[in-house]
Image (cartoon, rainbow, N blue to C red; front, side, top):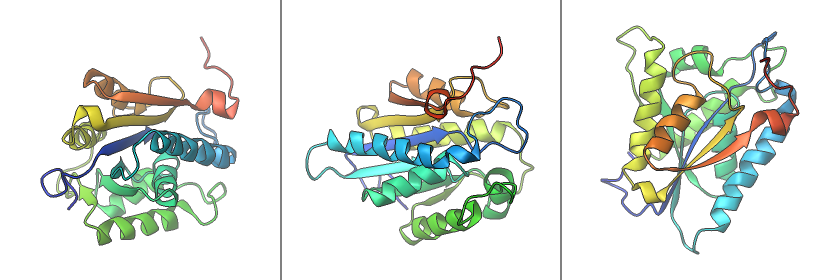
Length: 211
């Protein structure tokens, strides 16, 4: 298992939070499926920009959940740039897939998000970097996502607040339920972490939310 007690040599930590792909007919778009490539480029560029500021030989770790959209794009971008990632799941795989990975097949990307999740899950399991918040013995509720945010943040902060950067793909608005991206931004900023905000409304050219 990757953690500060067994892997104290980590010099920098990138923690990610961000929007999932919009469900069909979402009233106020945040991450339309058509903008996946734009998001991928922006997330990868932000990772590369952070990496370029680190001294040669820096050991880095990426931390994120495994939801469709931003989370999986972050894991994929880190892999392309040679950064090891840890996968944090609020629920066992079957429940997590249902809650956070499956997308309407009509708008799913190719290969699908489920296949991409399993690729990342296998890779993280092979390095001892797959972490589970709940064993599923208790029924999930909205609070589990807030607890998951706190868990990921505290895991990242355990390496040292001075080593942590939170990268978010976010429209700057409140979420649909507790435990969204705004909650992660709020708790990370309160803990003193640096925050890099990729504004999805600007990136995707979305209309501002109604007043």
